[in-house]
Image (tube, rainbow, N blue to C red; front, side, top):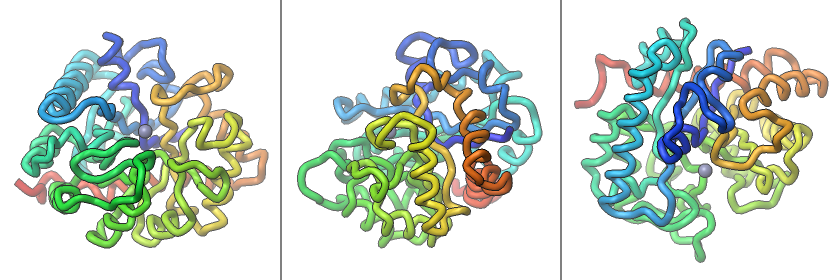
Length: 314
Ligand SMILES: [Zn+2]
């Protein structure tokens, strides 16, 4: 089975716990992920809301360096890709195809030049906020509904310029619409479910989903119990069906949030995707739709969105 997942916190968890991407006791590692082929995985550096300023930037740099060390230590197991050609080439091989992300624009420390620096370190997705407030704007658990700051607007433009996909998961609603207004670039919500199915501030309204769909973006289904409504395959299916009813067949992907949320033990971490695929088949989804959601939508998105190595902005 082919798998392309838009969000996990495994890299950060391994860095924090002194663990290894290759083998660990968390939700996923490179050994267990080999049940999928090809397997593309976005690995996020998570910036908690307690971390701000230069310390946030330093922390992000350290975790990104750790990612490269892991890549060197396990060259047969993982390769991080930063350009279109690398993605296409790596997907033909056996290794996990990693894409680096930062969850929390606080890592920029309010400095535009950090966008380029992170791009040079291979970061290709930045989630603008976590749940709280930072220099870019306000997360979905911030009081009030302030939109993006002037720095937030400039940072989004800079991300687009350097080939970094802005990720609107965790962002509050007015921030979302500010991003949508200031750029026509494709956007993703890497791990966000549907508010029509489960009323939760982290979930997207139908209008937000349609806006992401209209501009060729992606929405990743997350496995967080509070956002799902219940930690069971049926709940994942309910959110997926709703997105499909909104003509989202080219928009929906997975962003399971593995190692970032508590999964039921019976799901056995990354093994759950295979079982969800079987479950969706039983529910009557076609193999073609399942293939789109589990792999093709995200693969096509990044193939179209990642800059070519030749055209990279310097
Ligand atoms: Zn998250």
